[in-house]
Length: 173
Image 1: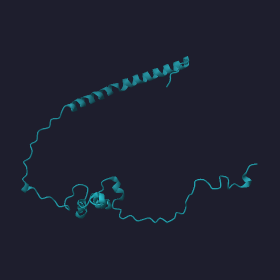
Image 2 (image 1 turned 120 degrees about the vertical axis):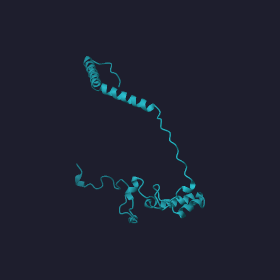
Image 3 (image 1 turned 45 degrees about the vertical axis):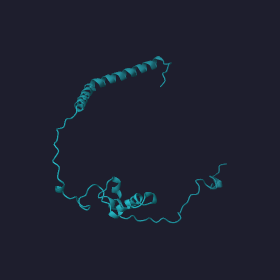
Image 4 (image 1 turned 30 degrees about the vertical axis):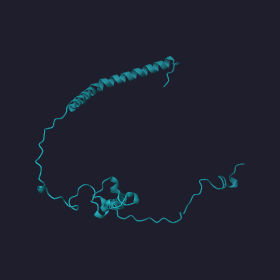
C-alpha cells in the first residue's frame, strides 16, 4: 500500500489512534498469555535437549542358532495365510518363464492373466477402501444401449434465428 503524502490532521489522528490501539492490544495479550507461552517454550526446549541425547539400549545376546534338522517344515500354500494376496495358481506362474514380453508372452501374458481375475479371487480381504465398494458383488450385468440414441443435438444455435417463432402481434409498433 502506498503512503499518502497529503494527509490532513484528521487522518493523522485516526492513524495515531489505530496505532496506539494495536499497541495496547499487543501489550494486554503479552500480559495475559506471555508467561504461559514462555513456560511452554521452556518445556519444548527441555524435551529437545532430552531427546538430543543418544539412547543407549541394553545389549542383547543373540539366541543359539537352531539346527537345520530341528526347524519345522514350511506350511503348504493352502495353509496359514501370509500377507494379503492369495497364492498364484501354478499354471499362471508358469507363464512368467515361457516366451518374451515383446511377443505378448512371458511377463506380459502373466500380468494380463492376473488383471483378468477379480480382486476377490486375488486377495483374502479388501486391501484398499476402493475394494470395499464392489467386494463380492458378483458378475456385473450389461446395460442395454440402443443402437441409435433418441435425441441428438446437431448445433447449439437455432437454425432459423432467434426470432423465428415470434407472433406478429408481439412486435411493438
